[in-house]
Length: 150
Length: 221
Image (tube, rainbow over all chains, first blue to last red; front, top):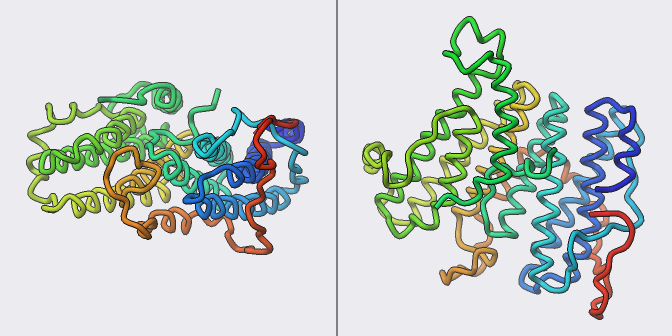
């Protein structure tokens, strides 16, 4: 994903590394939804806006979590390569689902690495991302956030 | 049809397998072995719950055959969940578990929409229970529970009124009824702060809409 996350994760405890990765994923999602918003069909603009707002809020919450853990929150990259060209509304929907699955994966790692309130919030964020992914794609997923591991 | 029992399932199964490995080989997990494998009881319960959920899908499909096709992928996910928790997968839809479904059939609401809502309620309460159970589980099992709970929350969304996303089937989308409450439900136990609504600008169209290069810049999304 983003290069800054892996750099910041060096030498960090597992929970800090996972929190930084989740923050980096949220940075990427905020960027990505900017692209989605510029390409998605009119009928789904408000859905894209809601998701964008949700990821901004989640990004800020994760930054606070990282800071509470005593680390310096990773910054957003200057730009991000899209996983595929986004030329029209269908691509935009595909990108949105991709972003949610990415975020879900990062939160899954954070669930495993954390306990208590951080775990609870990460599980909630995973769940919210999975629901958004399903709404975008219209397809169910058996194990959200588990595809891109390993 | 059993789609998607592919890489996702394989990864999760591998994860579950690692956890199961701690128990020293799938024996009867009771009493003494509990201390050695704190997750055994949670996994067994989760497998039973998903098995019962699959039976509900069977019952609804038996009473409302017109829904069978729509429900098949969700039931397939549920069977994958049973396996991931170390349970024995129930039979195929309309097959071995049909007899079991008949026991539940009397509980299935008599209209399709109510039957879908009945399934959605079962999915949601199970997802909520798992969201709570994962707090005390070992790390990898907690991740699996979180993923399966998220899958269930996604099922709730799919069991709601049809939306544009699923518009490839020609069922009419009721206008305005885009929220079946599942989004809110998933959000409320999230707790990842929707607190600061501070200055959220309009979704920026970062690319100029002038077509041409949809090229990408530096990092990677």
